[in-house]
Image 1 (spheres, one colour):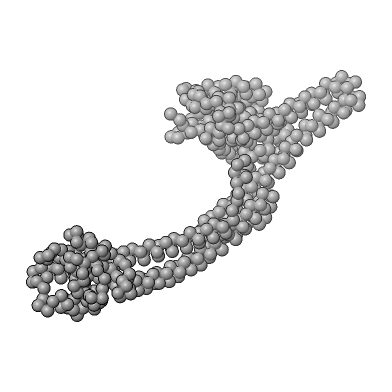
Image 2: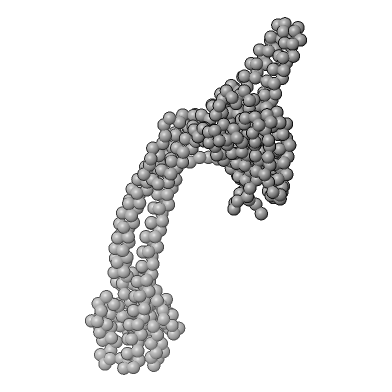
Length: 472
């Protein structure tokens, strides 16, 4: 009940959500890649600036200050790389030289974060806006040991070039992302248009099939999975159509089979009520007819109930499996059918060498074998033989019931095990069959995971065989 109340969503919603998730993913990837590029470039610049600052510091420590003073150091740096800014700071934070500005005009640098770190003997770095150059710079400061304490050599470079490069990278990534997004949007929309309309058609087709309209099948589709679904639906419709035809045929056959004994019983009962009961001879004859028709009606109902149970009930309720000797079953069948065989002077012969162990439902296998033997007796001429034999091959235990009757035309053999099918309708009814015996035999074989077969030639008799899987 909970599933029925669960809210249903259109495929369009899933499509929109997929597009939104895809867009978010593309933007996130673009942002992440840009951020990683920025971090990479800044780290590379920091390493380069530290190497340069340490080179200058080492040169000063080894060679001392130039004769012309501090300015020559920064001027030499300016000549080497105009994008690089070099600053020399003394112990008091006073700027001794700067390649990009006039030291007397500059503030005391002793409180700059990277300078404070360098005073402590470590490499300091930082990114901030420079009021002097009106640009954002990356600063790297290293300590320089002098006679009056620790000085600082600081190298810096503007991040404008890096930012411009990152902006260009971001712009290109964004353009690529947009193009990829549009391509995925168009592809997914195309796929959606390939999926949604066929699903709608399949739903309409399923509704038609549910109404019993099997005249129009679903077309073939380009999408493999949808085409397979449509083919499965068409196959289901074909089977449903066949089942519907079988149901109608079954209902018509049942109605016809039941109508005959009911009409007979009703007719003779009315005849008796109209006065025939007053004649003892007519009374006895009519009552015998009514009794036979009532027995026939009961037989039909019993067989229908048996078929229904075999077809619909769970196997655990149908089968009571156990190990039995097949020879004992066949001998018991002979005893049940012997009286009917004696009436036609038919010899019943059992050909079985004990023991033949078989794992079956005793009563069901008895019923199937009795049905075959009873049919053989009905259709065999007088003073002939019906043989009941057991044999074992590589994978099956087989029960053969053979007669010396008129045989069956090949055209009838494929339909022999259908309900109410008769090869010779007039003779079958005259002999009193319900038309369900062979169908019951087939179902009993099936519930035992076996099968039933028949071989026959006109004028040479018939052999019906129950094949059951060999079990160990």
